[in-house]
Every structure is written in structure tokens, then in C-alpha cells.
Image (spheres, rainbow, N blue to C red):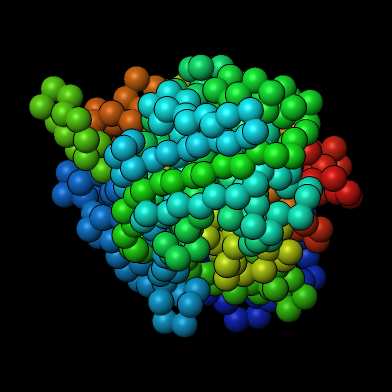
Length: 492
């Protein structure tokens, strides 16, 4: 799971037993989902511990995106999927590769922002007055300031943002630039501490999905208090006055790279429902190596998220060796989560299974620590999936689990794992998460600290939930208010 600032998944199906499809069609699907526990018992603590030990071993060097350790992890998962008889998602390949751009900002001496008006010229200080967005090797532009609602061709567009809306405004920049703008200024109304965090993020090496050639346009984030008084007051009133121009210069180095998601699936048994999909996700990446702590520089990421990824592999095996459900089931281990949900973002933009036919996403991120009898299901109140999960744990006391709502809404975990890239595109989700702990994003997140017995019970719950979703007559339903809030206005 990434830190909050970095927030600016494989598959499965099963072997068809002779005559099973006809028999299943004759049964009441909800009854099948409740009575048939399928291969849940094959999901064991021993297997979870073994798989976590492989993926969080020092030889994987923390599974950074991209890295040789991540590729070794992905290859291990793909071999397991292949051995279970899962179908690769792309021809004969379990890998969905996606392009990355590594951005290394240049020195502050290579960044500048000058505002001009009949009242004078205002050169802002890159160390305190603005934050250059490193989007060009040696990018420079100038032009009159304009609002995004104006004719933006040849203009430097000014947009206003707060700490709550900065991510959205950054996401809209590409569309503004595609409309002919030559640059952008984001006037940020936020506390100094937040601005300092934004500066730290953009002055560090980072990854973006895409190629360098689509990122060439100078832009800067300017705290409102750093703007000349007359311009600041106009922007605070929602206006961009005429007569102002900006000269924006940035420097950075760009390097093209790539990473992968691992995706496999098995087709559902019902001719009428097999073109609908239940998608299970977890992220296989972690943060790599870093500052040594007690002599250890490998950030193994056993809980974050080798625990959830081991669960995906266990689920794939359980489904593949049992009776196939009516809907198709997809299992996905994504990369780039720690860099800002990059792999799931790419999948959301380039889905291999139609998102409008994806009836649910069940995401597991950090399921091997903390309380032995409790698991948080973020998104529980958003759809019928929450009540379904509650009923399953009530019907299966052997799981020894209680499913609870988000305990830390102020941490915004909803936006910090890969389910979000499904939810915001209209797919009902549940995010299974045991919370952070003292070893979060530290070298001490080691395999020997995983409660694999607890993790196995959570994965069995996810298996039973996924089995019921895949066999039900009707797909999960959004709460209308939640749909409008998460997906956008006009939601049904």
C-alpha cells in the first residue's frame, strides 16, 4: 500500500466436470452459493506461509517497480497459474505489460517562473514560491494567463486547487494541454505542511504510466500566498484577470521503462453468465531497498502485500481444482501499487475483460497481521457485497472472523489500493485490509511475523464470497448514493 502522497490486480476458473453445467443451471444459484464450500479447505496456513516466504525472500530485493525482483515474483506467479491450468489473459502470455516513464527532476537552478503585468515583473523563487512539475527534458513556455473555461490555445491555464482537490486538478492537466494550452499553473490553497509534502514528492524520482513524449508541457504548482497580491485576490474570487503573462521553465531527465501485471482466468460454466467476471486483485510489488534499519536495507513487504498476493495464488488453485462457477473468474496481481496504483490504473484504462461486465472486484492488501479474529472490509457500505460478506461469516463460524467497516476514514485508505481503479469506473468493490503496524514500509515487515493461519481464514472468506457472487442469479448492486459519490453524478 502506498503512502498518501503516492496516491496523486490472476484470475481463475476451473475444470468443467462432465454434466456439471446442466446440473448447476437446474439449481437455485443462491442456494448453491450458500451450501457449496467448494475447495475452501485447500487454502491452508502452511501454503500461505510458504508462498509469502518465497515472495518476501531477500532474493526478491523488495520487489520494487520495476526491478529484477519484481520480474522474478511475476514469473513465479505465472508459473503457478499455468500449473493450475488457468488461461492466460493475452494469447499465451500471463503478463500484461505497461509503459512507464521514470522522471528525475533537474536542479532548482533549471526551474523558473516569472509573472509579468503592467504593474511589474515578478520572479518567483523555486525553493519556496513554486513547485515545478518535471514534465520536460528542458521545457520552456510563455503565454498569457487564462482560465480553463476560456479559449486556452496558446495560453498558460490557471486552475485553483486545495489539498482535497489537487489530485483531481493534476489529473485534468493532460486534457487541458490537449486543448491547446502551452502550460499550466495550479494555484494551491493549502497549509504549509501539505505544500512541503507536495514539494518533496515532485522533487523526488517518480514513475508515471505512459511514455515521455506525452508529458512535455511546463507546469508549476504555486501556493496562493506566493502570487502577487492582485493576481491572488482575483484567483480567490474565481477569476483570472487579463493582462498577466507567465514564463515557465522546467528541467528533468526522462527514461522509458515497463512493468507488468500477471493475469489469468478460467471461463464460467453458464452460457448466459460466462461473459460476466468476478475479479480478485492484490499487488505483488513493494518498495525495494532503502535506508538500512539495524543493518537491513531490504524492505521485504511480507504483509504489504505478499500476504494478499499469496492469497490470490491460493484462490486461483482452489477455483481451478473445484467445480467452475457460473460466471468467469479473473485473478490479477498488479505492480506499481506502491508508486501510485500504476498497474491497476493501466488495467482500468486498458481492461482485458470489459469493465461493464465486471460484476465485482475483491481486493486483498495486507491481511497477515494485527487482530486474529477481525478483518476490515473497506467499501462495505457501498454495495450489497457488504451484507453478503456479513452473512457468509455468520453462516461459517469456522472462519472465526468478524468483518468490520473502515476504522480509519481519516487515513483515506479507500483511495490507496488497487480496488479504487475499479470502483471509480463503476465496479462494486470490497477491500480486505488489516490495517498498518509498526513494520509498515520498514525492513522489519518479514515473513516470520505473518499470522498465516489468520490470512488463510481471510482468503477462505474471500473464496466463499467470490464463489457466491459468481453463482448468483443477479450481480451485486451499488447503493445509489455511494455510486453517485464514487463514480459521479447521474449514477443510478
